Image 1 (cartoon, rainbow, N blue to C red):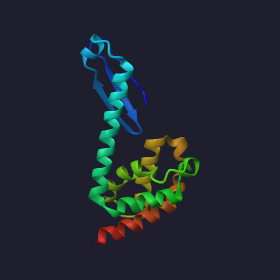
Image 2: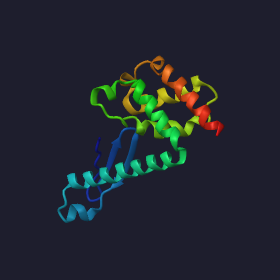
Image 3: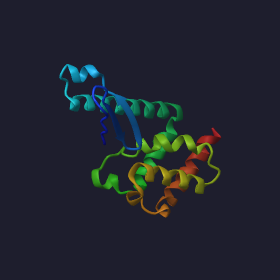
Image 4: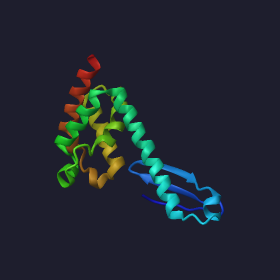
Length: 152
């Protein structure tokens, strides 16, 4: 999470959560009434995470079972070793929420690999994401799951 403050009395914060970024103007009364900037930042972060969670739930409802299928595939493959490290079963749900919509425009498993790889680079940096080849197997599995889903 990063913060950027502009001049008083209309401070602005920029909150970055994963790949999401939002700027918000803090109400000047927060400064005038003695509310701490830290609390205002925490509140903005809570609102931001809620919006991101609500959007992920909307996508999950829209796509149904394919959302969970792709999450399970990413969990099993664990391309950046995050689930092995912390044991979270839904650790890749955020990525699934942004991988799913562009799948409609994919014509091959290679297209899917590009979408998946770009998402991991965007979320975690190129160093953490590693080589594109790391995503070949899971992208093929996602492509096959997407084909089954699309036939319905």
